Structures are given as structure tokens and as C-alpha cells.
Length: 333
Ligand code: G3I
Image 1: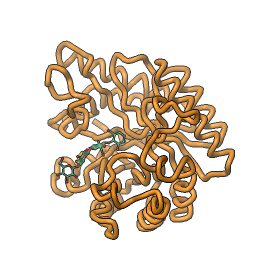
Image 2: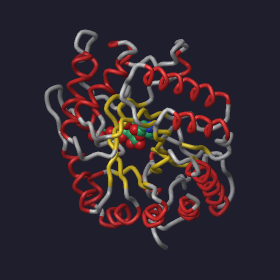
Image 3: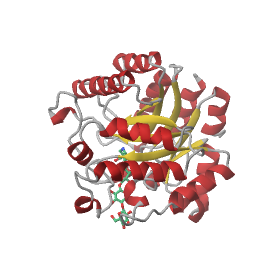
Image 4: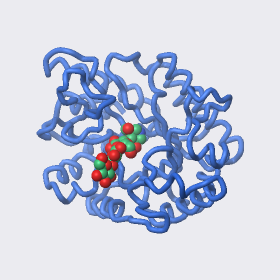
């Protein structure tokens, strides 16, 4: 079938997926699937602190460079993920980074990493997952190493450093659990909006919000509340990227055909609704083939132990109903 990429290019959209750079050259079938289907890529792990920082004074850009070379060879854009997060920190982090030097480490990381890739990226997830309603803080911020060591200003420091190091990349705040119309999601979405408003009011350089979109079949549907959020961001001049789309089907019983139909319906309804908004400009899935999805991990696996069928291609790289649903949704743009 004609590719997601071909349909997205007709529609004027970016579509793509998270990838593991080693596999692009190491597994020809995976490389050609990614080359055919995506016009934008993001590293699932290769540009996180843990991957880039083997020791406090060394940077290892091999994974990111390999990704950039592949993308350049195939005419694809690349998103950077991410510059500042409370997870995927190297093992030396705790003990080396302290209240006294944390701000220096963060700024130096951003100068070095965003500087290394400067001019080559579509966008950076500058700060990832900084909001947590369960923190109980009035500002909604997550109690993370960055918050504890630097204070709430770490967010704006990170954005300013990123703009300085790479003026061309669209600077993005990226978060999860803000998509559907359930109470938890509504609350967190409100706190993300508060954060973005604070940043804008203080002149912080932010260009986009990433809505991760790790959706779960049979959860409350994303709906009017999310669209209001997207439109309000639009009025503030911000783009919106769907950055990590997949559909956890751990609550779906029945045959493979029934499971695939439920996943496909969610892809169709969600993406159709989102791409009707002009400031939604990119749709990336978190992986491309079910062979490599994070959703088979302990916390998210199916209770019956069957592998998740959550992405546009199954574990044999064959397109599943979600592929056709996503392609049709792109066509509605
Ligand atoms: O790199 C080491 C490797 O050296 C070691 O041998 C191996 C043994 O466990 O671990 C490897 O690191 C793992 C890494 O993935 C690369 O495979 C980590 O343990 C594992 O925790 C890590 O998981 C990733 C997770 O983020 C944490 O960084 C997942 O693959 C990745 O899908 C997930 O992605 C996140 C996004 O960044 C942010 N949004 C949510 C999303 C899903 O959790």
C-alpha cells in the first residue's frame, strides 16, 4: 500500500516514528520500513542523558549522528528527545550532580548537545514530563532531581539555553497523560496549560507542546477538552506535535481481529480529531513495528502475556488495521 509518508506529504503533515539508530543499518527490513513510512524521526533513547553521557566529562554522539545521517540520506526531519528529564539519567548522576553544580551541569549539557546538533533538527523536547498533579505543589510541578536541586526556574533556564545553542529548532515542552477527558487527565492538562502560560508570560522561548499520546483502548476518549487545549495553544502561537502515539490494548479481550479493530478505531478517531486543528503539524508513533514496542514491559503488558498489537505494523512488519486507520486519518487533513 502507499505509505504513511506519501499520504502525509500530500496532506502537508509530518508523520514518523521513534527509532533505534543501530537497527536502521543493522536490520535492513527495519531500515527500509522506516525509510518508506516516515518523513520525521526521533530517537527512542539515543539522545537521552543516559545514552549521551558515559561519564561526567564525556559525550558519545554516535547514536544521534547515525540517526541524523540516515535521516539526511532519506530526506527525513529529526526531533531531538530530550534535553531535560527526571528519567534516563546516567548512573553517575546521583552523587556527581549536586545542588551546587546542577545548574551548571544542565546548561553545559544543553550547550554541548543542542550545540552539536544545531541547525539539523526540526525540534527539541527541551523539558520532558515536568508536571505531576500528585506532587501536591500549587504550581503542579513534579518533584524531580532538577526541581529539587535548581528549583522551578530550571525549566526556563533550559529553554533559554536551548534557544541560544540551536536557534533553528522548535523548542517543545513534552508530556503524557493529558489526552483524554477523564478527571486525572483533565487536571494534568490544566496544569500543563498553567505552566505554558507562565513561560509565555515570562518571555521564555517555547514554540510547541508535545502531546505524547500513549493512549489506552477503553479509557475515556480524548475529546472536546483536548481540542480546547490545542486551540488555546494555537492562540498563543504554539504548534502541537503528537510525539509518542501508540495504543495500549491490555484491556481488550477477544480475537486478534477484534483487538486490531479496537486499536485501529482509536488511531482513526484520535488522529482525525487532532489533524483537523491547523496547529497540529506532526504525528509520530512510539516505534513502527510491534516487534519493538516498550508496551510489552512489566507495567504495561497484557495480562494474558500475549504481545501487544499497538503500532501500525505487526511483528512481521505487515501493515495492520491501525496503519490504514492512521493513513485515512491523515487524508482527512
Ligand atoms: O542502554 C541500556 C543498556 O546498556 C543495558 O544493557 C540495558 C539492560 O536493561 O538497558 C538499556 O537501557 C534501557 C533503555 O530503554 C534502552 O533499551 C533502559 O533500561 C530502559 O529503561 C529504557 O527504557 C526506555 C524508557 O523510555 C526510559 O528511558 C524505553 O525504551 C522508551 O520507550 C521510553 O520512552 C519514554 C519516552 O522517553 C518519554 N515518554 C514515555 C516513553 C515510554 O516510557
